Picture 1 (cartoon, rainbow, N blue to C red):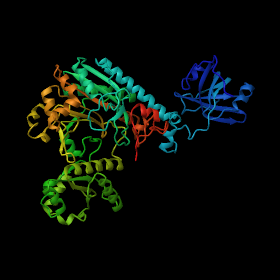
Picture 2 (tube, rainbow, N blue to C red; picture 1 turned 90 degrees about the horizontal axis):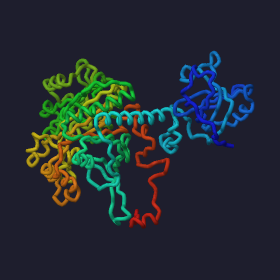
Picture 3 (cartoon, rainbow, N blue to C red; picture 1 turned 45 degrees about the vertical axis):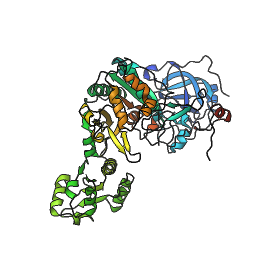
Picture 4 (cartoon, rainbow, N blue to C red; picture 1 turned 30 degrees about the vertical axis):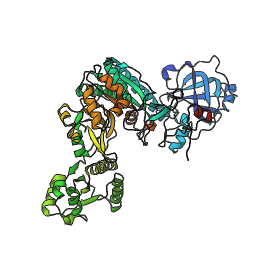
Amino acid sequence: MTEPLGDMRRTHHCCELGSENVGNEVVLMGWVQRRRDHGGVIFIDLRDHNGLTQVVFNPEHNSAVHEKAHDIRGEFVIAVKGKVEHRPDGMTNPDLVTGEIEVMVNELKILNKAQTPPFMIEDDIDVSESIRLQHRHIDLRRPKMQKNIITRHKASAAIRNYMNKNGFFDIETPVLTKSTPEGARDYLVPSRISQGMFYALPQSPQLFKQLLMISGFDRYYQIVRCFRDEDLRADRQPEFTQVDMEMSFVGEEDVMAIAEGLVSAVFKEVLDITLDTPFKRITYAESMDRFGLDRPDLRFGLELKDISDIVGTSGFKLFANVVKKGGMVKALNAKGCENFSRKEIDDLTEFVGVYRAKGLAWIKVRENEWQSPIAKFFTDEEKQQMTDRLNMEPGDLIFFVADQPKITNDALGNLRNHLGAKLGLMDPKEFNFVWVTHFPMFEYDETEKRYQALHHPFTSPLESDCELLETDPLAMNSRAYDMVLNGSEIGGGSIRIHQKDLQIKVFKALGMEKEEYEEKFGFLVAALDSGAPPHGGLAFGLDRLMAILCGGDSIREVIPFPKTQKGACLLTDAPSSAAADQLMELSIKVDLE
């Protein structure tokens, strides 16, 4: 039989009592973590979001309450009133904040009973993620998950405090908006009032925050939900949270300084770590050359080296033919890994295949020779050149990929990260930040046979490159910048185009006719023509940043109610079918055949 709370009121949380409270009468409320019966005396660890307190039911102290305590089981919700006492000698628990005291119970109320949970409410549990997500309300009771969500709250509070102090206005933007191309599929919402018409959920507040700058608000920010209908993985969700900001009358340095200050404030609040600013900066071209990726992890070496000039005329025809066709050959020196087995090398070959590499050549450097099927194809001069460039020493294992630049960089860049983890080179306690700048303005889509914006079509090109817009767009660099932390892009932004004529030229370079850009972006073009200030901004991926701060492998560990990699909510069984009358109101017919 459960009981009402009545006039009983909580006086403390379950992690607030210590020796200074001995003799005080207190009221605690929470969940039963565990129950132990030691020869008649019943001990219960009572839990709330703050921690644990041991409460005691002694038949010699209060026989009626003790008898009632026999009904208590794990995860029951209870309220207790009693006096704080020192634990007996030798019974203190140094691992518990409240380990010096216990509460001798005089009054007990069982507020709610509970079924046996599907898993223990503890951190080190052996249970599948799908079971955890199906019972997320229970999973969130675990100390680690509670800490993650509370840490996220602290980070959000630090963000708001920092932005408010720096003159930013917290302004909301629409959730039901117009479908505009921003690199991923939109989630569409049918309109009942305008039959056959659709809203889109925003992939980001990009255009609205630019309009706010044109409206004269000068500094905007928002912790905002965004939506993208794309294939999912550990660091993607269909709905995610951005820390979005925009500033007027600024250049790259201004935005970067604010962003560094924001991240520094969060790290100080959450981890009590003082970051060194300004952060390192490298260009996109340098990042791709040295690390193969535009999000480099600078905690370790294993840098890539282009050896196309050395092997392009070598006797190894595979390398030579790739270079002749405009491709490249890059190498990675896995220092001290000469003892890798053939199976390990085969596994790494399979790994780079995921990134479309057709193979992974290798050389083991021995004291007086190279062990490799390809060693015989190189002259002594070529071997010496590779030795010098790759700093090859006995005990090293050299990996090679030869392909088109994008595939070569992608395969070896990801192999570098994989080896960094495998060899223990990534210090989880080190936080290495870097800005990647001067991204290409465009990339060419072979499928659609046209240019695409590498970031988005509102990114400003470098002023010195504007003259290339109509003659050589692929040679243009943009005023875009990404903040990278330990190999993960946690924020990205750019200086925006604020002139109507330049914006139209960029639309045309992307293959848009006037009718298309007027239909999709006519409101922006008109706004730019009304007096737009120079402006720029940045958006942080809050989920991704929190995963790093909390030491999680997936952003699902820092989101209260996440979706699976198939976009499903196992707790609520969403998405689900709609009722026939709802579909009829929207003039929608579902035909899956």
